[in-house]
Length: 105
Length: 285
Image (cartoon, rainbow over all chains, first blue to last red; front, side, top):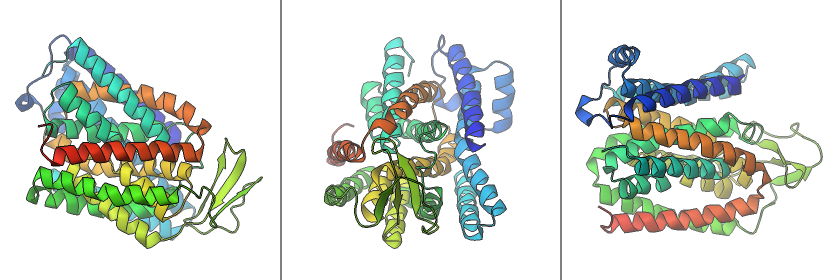
């Protein structure tokens, strides 16, 4: 189950990456200052055909895969009543969230 | 920075090698990819680090999506150690601004020496007292953090009990700090922590480390992404290379013997230590 989720996540990510690369290769990399980092903007411009934004969506999907793994393990352990391990997984998830919040202010 | 055909080829190939190594050894491959990006393609260091962090996740998830990890990776132990690693990652990320890059690299190089010594000491015992081989899986008498997996080369089930959990946690915390400071996955320290300190067999150590580095890298990745340091074109090319390389590596991995992997890892440690020492002493900028 987890492996299926991972594979589909990677597939989606890979497709977006190939699509985005195909669009930006003729033009070269965009300058760093012009890169969007807000999710809404990225979505919008990707829909409009922006190669860089498409890639960014693919990369975000990729970055989420480990987080999903931890969630899957948390659910599995909670379901199996392995309370100690479930708590540990929750702690890791919380730490992940903290670092995300710290990083994105 | 333009994505010329040559650069693209370099990046994808480097990604493939990284993915291959990652599948075999449980490392993220940043120590290989970053120099290629900086020296081979001319990318500024902080962008190279950001790309590397994302590629660590690619390696980790790609290998995890195959059969290689199943049963071999010790998720329970990995998750427990990840608490220490993630905590270290946060403190490392916070203190990153206080230390000069050369100091960080020097620190890293210095820490590699005792790590190499640990792995060297471990080399004579593929089957120490806490590891047992048997024809059938025997989970019954094992503790929560112990493990059991099937080794295809030895054609036997291998069960092991972990040792020195506290030392493993300490080293994981350290690895986490370096991860936050240098933007690496930390596998180069996690594998020795698992194999030499906690004394789990090399294959299990590699698979468990592979699981852990993805989680560690995910924490930092959001930060780098939010700062706009993840260059789309280069990162996309590297990730695609990794997906290919790790596919090949996953097919090859079960055919390697534990001590062959350990020797490969030792060579890696020497190369990384040399690279870090060189950078700390002022070269390559």
